[in-house]
Image (tube, rainbow, N blue to C red; front, side):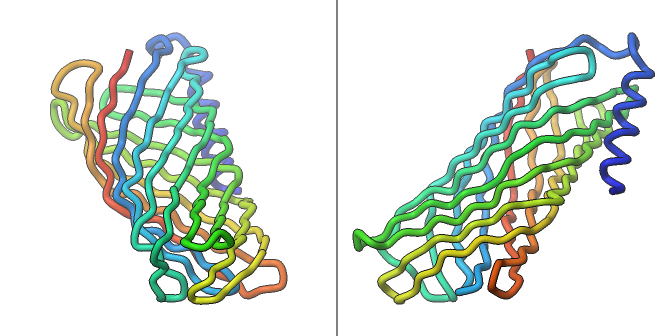
Length: 240
């Protein structure tokens, strides 16, 4: 797989570089992602919006090696199924991941590679006691990130990840419109984030950009579907 070769190449360069890299550090990132989400199932497509609050923690384990943990939460609004509005439903969009990352910075350019596990979950309940929705997307993620300084205190950062093997579940029962289903499947997809980063003072940065997540799913006993989570993202990073 090409992306795995890239990650391995980054790791090899990092190991070879050795002492030239600054010592490990820690960072905390807070982000707000007003996202538009859709999740295709064999019985129909769910769509909704969530203003997702994210917390990311980076902890250095060794020079150039770190652990990255991300948690995200956002209330569900505007929920629809097959284009029909689902009124009276309340729920949450949940997401999280844990990644091992290796990275190297030299002058105006920084590059890293990472691998780990994570995913997304929608859980919602409706006006009837039997109304429920559980949509789940979990799997391995591998990817690369690149940072490029374009001016003093200003840089571009891009992150690209592949999810080569995703386990997907859809379990729902709706009273209006009447629909139900329990499906499992597997899929693959990619995540892309591109942001502009402004760092007016040392160890503090604000950023704004766009984030997109896409999935292609093959369901057991059902047709293939696609899912997407997209939207602008803004945030703040504090390094220690």
